[in-house]
Image (cartoon, rainbow, N blue to C red; front, side, top):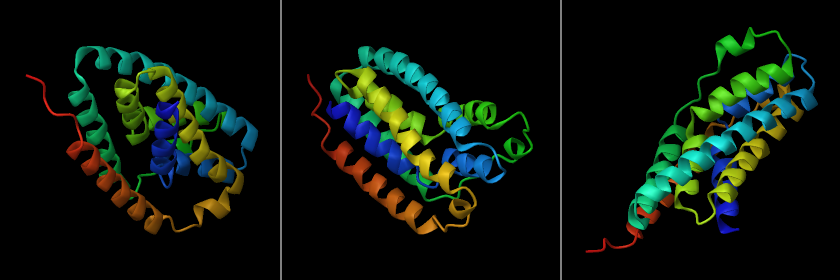
Amino acid sequence: MDALLFAFVAAALAGIGDQTQVLAGTLSARGDRPGAILAGMALAAAAMVVLAFVAGSFVGGLVGVRAETQFVALALVFAGIIGLMKPEPLRWAERFRWGGFLGAFVFGGYSAASGRIQFLTLAFAARAETPLLASIGGALGLLAAAIPATLLADKFLALNLRPARIAIGIVLLIAGALVFLNAPAPTV
């Protein structure tokens, strides 16, 4: 159960101001139905669960606990560094006119699978005793970040999330450093 909680919190924090959250707000602001957008994001998150579970189970079976812990530290540091940068909007997603569900599924899946949320989820799944719970936690964290953006639409896009992104980026960097420093000692 810890894996689900840690992955959820890390993914939800990393999702604040992330490309996936901006996409959800953009699709909603152009008039697409919030329910359709959230359904598309949920389906993209479900695909993310499968990828993270399979890859996390594979990686977790190949390496020891020390390497798994260092992998989590690397994912946290990566998420922190990306959090300090301004997310690039998916310009081509704004021109996509096939509806909120398909747009959220295709572009939400792309941005989630290619970003820090997927990397965090994969790392937590590789380290967890129950990779499926970590994978589900990461997907729920992604959705937790997408919900306010979808419901607030234009109001969300008008928010200045830079201070929050920077603060969360620093917290993730510190967490990554602490996880790395507390990695189990190598066994001989």
